[in-house]
Image 1 (cartoon, rainbow, N blue to C red):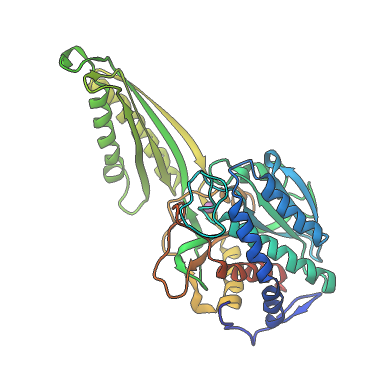
Image 2: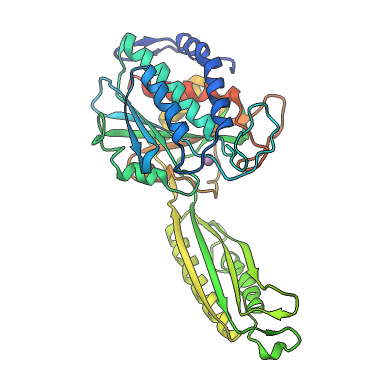
Amino acid sequence: MVTDHATSRSMTVETASITDQQLKAMINEQLDELIQIRHDLHTHPELMFQEERTSGVVKTHLDAEGIQHVDGLAKGTGVLGYLPGDAGRAIGLRADMDALPILEKTGLPYASAHEGRMHACGHDGHTTILIGTAKILARIQREHGLPRPVTFLFQPAEEGGAGGDLMVQEGCLDGSLIGEPLENIFGLHGWPQTEQGAITTRVGPIMAESDRFEITIRGEGSHAAWPHGSRDPIIAANAILTALQSIVSRNTSPTDSVVISTTMFNAGTAFNVIPSEAKLAGTVRTIDGQVKARTIERMEQIVASIAAAHECTAELDYRHGYPVLVNDAEAVELLREAGVGTLGAQNVHDMVDPVMGGEDFAYFAREIPACFFGLGLIPRGSDSMPLLHQDTFDFNDAAIAHGIEIFCRLALRSA
Ligand code: NI
């Protein structure tokens, strides 16, 4: 636990009067059990849309607290929990549950028991924090009532499956499944670039739109010793690969952001054969819709004309991914207040620039006012830690209490 910087400021809600000390004490009492839950989830990572066990763990804890819920969402593993409250509209709190196809190399006693699957993005921590928040708020609700209803969204498939989009489409925000329509929604992500005991967020775009592309270049193969008999797709693909970078340097304003990363270049089967086909694939990240439209327009021109210049043909398959994640100014203000109460003003950071990673919390934020924030994970006494999606990454248990307290304060605030 971080030292409390705001103990003098009591948090009074309409129907409950919970002091900062009482809230922190309630969370502390739960902490050992929650750390065990986190380690258990870490040992049993499940890939997108296969989160059956994880979903079962969530439901067991909701049932134990008598929290109503709807399950079987978003292709089967999504869970929507609900606690009633006084206000007409609910606050939404969201966690993602899926793991990644990575071979874990942490060497931890609770490391993955499933080879090739790993909680390398810390969603085990996010799920635990939301379970913990539900437990605390259920207790407060039983003893004092809650100032507003709370909806808990446990979603599958954040890592590329757009589970968040399915949750939205199935009615998780509009009150059609359970409880009241949501007024706003909050989500967090463990942030390995920020120290434990701090949070970071920003108003406006915080995570990028993340798209994928695949380019297939077709020419004519030949014996490598008779290159003039070929129309070499490798030479054409190489020229296309280089020219794509000019979109960033020459077609985009220096003050706008675009990432074009070609991450796959595949061609050929033998040292003495010029192949007939080459493939490039990668990702495009943008913040602004006009920059994105211009990027796609230039990609199409470059791919077609450079292939033609090399007597090849080429096809661009551009796939739109998660939308840009935009934080609402008022929701960010509420989050900052909860963050200051939990961690102190000096530990609530303003994120200067958006991150070019993608995040499917964007689908919720497209529908209702939302705030997504980074929860600091760098352990005390360290300057850095493994980054998200690295095979040595592990969520920091010391951040669990911070996430829960912030979520609880958002739900319990009086205004
Ligand atoms: Ni993640």
